[in-house]
Amino acid sequence: MAAIWHNDGSGWHSMAPSGFPDEAALHTLIEDAPQILPLAGTPILAVVGREVSLPSGYADLIALEPTGRLAIIEVKLARNAESRRAIIAQVLTYAADLHGMDATALERDVLASHLRKRGYESLAEAMAANDQTGAFDAISFSTGLDENLSQGRFRLILVLDSAPPELVRLVGYFASITDKLLVDLIAVSAYTVNGSQVLVPQRVDPERLATEAEPTPTPPKATGRVADGAEDFLATIDCVPDDQQPDLRRLHDWAVALERDGLVKLIMYHGKDQWTLLPRFQPENVGLVTIWNSDGARLQLWRSVFERRAPRSLPHVERLITPVRVGQGSYAPMLSDALLEALTVAYREAVSE
Image (cartoon, rainbow, N blue to C red; front, side):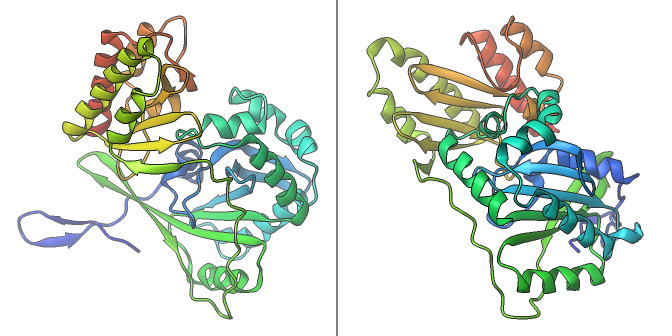
């Protein structure tokens, strides 16, 4: 287990984890911020259901990857007796429930109410709304979803506050004998530092008890590439009509100022006939906005990141874009100086927390 060390004047001491008050607290944390999980392959996850009713019980969380693979997430505290062996039986039973299910039935009969609660009409819409890069390919996603359901290829994610040795051995054995299920065992330690909660998530890699057979996920369709910095984005502005260039340059300059002030790292995504500039917090690698050069300048807002990182700034930003509401992937209807100033304040709030 990772440790946090502090010096109180008498030397360095290891801090004891403060833990979670109950299982629901850890459950909600993962639902709200699945990106904190250090998963194999670092996929983007879109949570599409909580306490999802399946024939054999209720799955804690169901999420999607851009490849169309489902992730079944079970959350337990180590003090729960089910955190040793029963958690494996639970998650495997849920995988068996989903194996062979038709994608339409999954969306209509299993996840429809969960999707509506989150403001989505479909699984593809939910996945697209959580893709900040613009790399999402709806056709590849749909094809992958059908294939993964048919073949029983899932990601099983076990999240605990600490991983019991018995569970670590069991996961190691299980991962060594299957090539269709990718198992991530994650331990999330919580500490209280100066009144704030600090999380230390770790992926537990158990020793393989046999020849390792790593499942190979279906890769998303390669439609672009990623580059650090904003220089490439600036170069793309010359490729668009003259009347679109001023807003794009203004957004570029604003993002560069955020990076210069140490608030973000800028990442550029080259897509097909579209480009995005991503002002991202590190190491979480998410941002409050995505800047688009696609049929003009567009500014996309990410509500889940606002709620988690800059909640005090959210009402002011929403007032400035009325009647539009900050949603998960909604677009600002205008690019005023007041909005950019408010967003700068939001980024500062996010970094200061």
